[in-house]
Image (cartoon, rainbow, N blue to C red; front, side):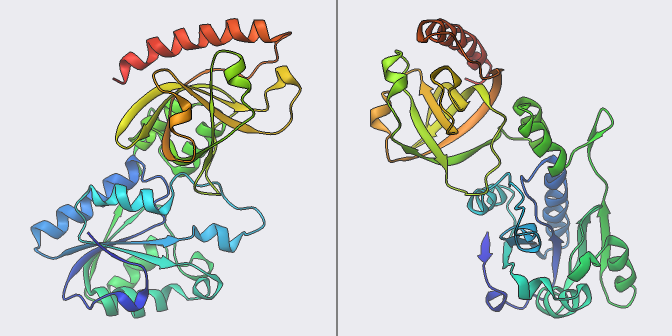
Length: 311
């Protein structure tokens, strides 16, 4: 898959099948669109091209209240590569670009550079200044130009439409297993392992603190989770706590992981992928460290049973 990070890098295409979107999370609905793009390109012997944006447009349009995102741009590209797309265009989204009208974006970038015979778009995607680039807008413009428009309907599960918004809400409420089902992949992110207070080691459960590489990464609700870590393609199962460690009257939010078969000293300073398999319980305040240790033993037993599903 060719990756273009500047508009000036895009070669002129004779023909293509194009889709446009933020594709945050690349959930099952997004995957349906991408598969249609790749399939249509193959049967017409042309290039499949996906257009997306970095940073997320809402980080520019609403900079005072930045949207927590599901997927770092590099993870998104890694994911997109698995679909055998021919090209991905990552448009640098800034204030200047946000002022480009939908018509200019269509004419000067999509039609002029990519020469699409078909544009495939999600039912709810809008582009261009004031979000005027609707599916209806594309259908109207297709009548004046030589391209087709295919608007992809949403995917639903039990009357619940799968969307990035609903997935974010699920994760924020701790329903990570449900979110992973809607995503089509286990929710998680790349993080750097950093040194912590060492309190976990004193409890017999040494932990590694971690911070996401993406500063606007969506973090699940506070609580204890069964997790899978990956470093150098090796899976490390364990449990993690997200919260403020109320038993010790602390107030600073921390993310700390205890891996069952790994010495945490070996991974300090390294980058690891942390995947949230299932939520075990809420964060709790215990009367003393001994009560906490007993609960941690129960948490570990629960996680050991859960990970049998993921091995």
